[in-house]
Length: 253
Image (cartoon, rainbow, N blue to C red):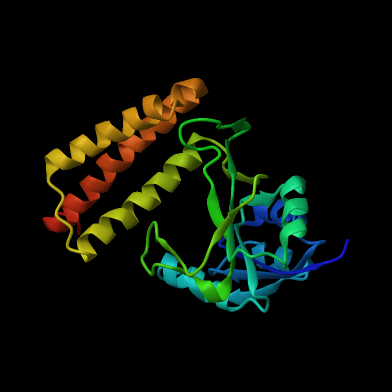
């Protein structure tokens, strides 16, 4: 298969469990693979090198800054951003090859097919959940904040219809671990930006997120998994507030 002028950029930290599937999905058609590794202690880097990836080492400091730095290492103007627990489906590969490099758009979003274990979450706002993942690096930038950075794009966005496959949560335990990490970053962001979060607002947000996920986004159609996703959306607000409160009031040592 002919390679196209596209750099696939992957952010990693201890991802040996996922690396083979991720790299296999792009290795025979992407013009370049760039891996930016955050001090992995497993075989992540060795696996990346075995696929011919260019590996850079950089400690994660801030998600937005880290990702912008990673994209700057790409030699091609077009970049596809993947996490190590994601794969390009064969249909998406063919769609990307059909549109690059001769397109009037400056970026493309594409559906993210999310799994918890072996279950494809089709509702709860998780699918198609289009994400802007392919872009001209000179026209794209992340907001340089630690959690949920916004995207800034100078140009027009096209829409692809085939899926990135995301297997980020082998089970509920991993989902909860992710929630714990994200709520810590969220609380720190609120403190750093001087955000005022009253208890009443936090409670309202938690309840709103549950019903928005389970009812508004039809999470009930995903059964118990849909309920758990809604419950985690509720927990996210509660735990983020608890961590914010202990930091604001000097309770945390």
